[in-house]
Image 1 (tube, rainbow, N blue to C red):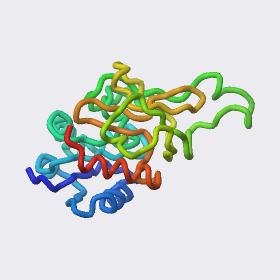
Image 2: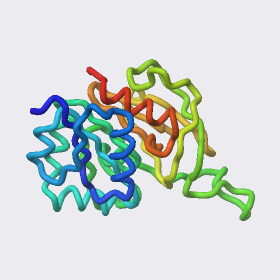
Image 3: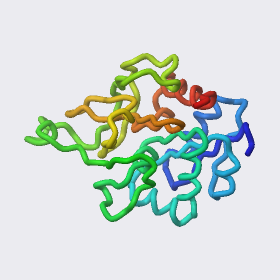
Image 4: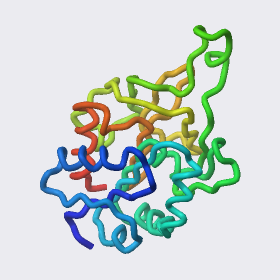
Length: 215
């Protein structure tokens, strides 16, 4: 294992290269690599799992590339950061693709935004997807929140949100019609629904914290 290598898993995500650029800006001393093989993920000291678009497409890309077991192994043994659909894939399944299994690294599911706030006449109901800047309210202290203020704004683009089985896995919540979990943490795993790479200084700080995190 190379102590300085951070693997960014290629799951066919549109945000892949913006994640790489943000990591290189936050940690110029690290060796940031886009990884397409299980061997590369096994070799890395840290793993970032980005995702953007459809749950089905991202899981299919991981499966066809033979990366599912490598990501699951990484989640058991080294710091892992999930971003957007990379967060959603950590769970068991998603309403977006009920016939597709997630990675089942964390127990829970992924649901579409629904409820009274999203219903009604056009112009009155909240739009789905939830898109734009919104606040993250921390559920407790965590190393990746270091030097990030509680209630900081982050950038979101999503129609689905995770529902962890264990409430203590919620690391932050956001209000958009409902209060939903926007970040999770469990041992050596941390993941966000928002895009740190699109979230200015607060997002870069999360990447900086991840690079130095010793769970």
